[in-house]
Length: 126
Image 1 (tube, one colour):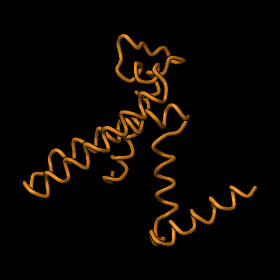
Image 2: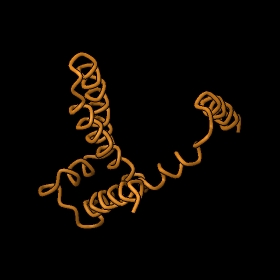
Image 3: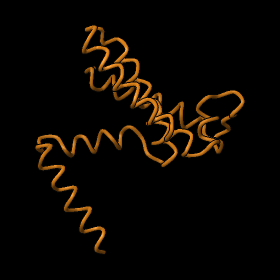
């Protein structure tokens, strides 16, 4: 089994746990942090994503000075976790994100960004 498969399996397992915490699946906000965030609606988990993104930046800046990247990994894990809660809320999974990354594979980031701008403009004119 490749590391890629193992990573995808870990993300799929975590996504399944998050999915099980939705109110429709019996998630109890009094017993589950995920259920509590989901019950509060998008503002709650989107705020957490913003907080965690800021903490990633701060940990990276600290690592630039100290050389210790441990906090970077921990904060990115928190960011991914809270992003996965958002994915679940919107009926999406890590597999959807992986598929998008695979779609972009081999494409220049500059080209990808330019293409997105064109597509966004086209969508606005419809």
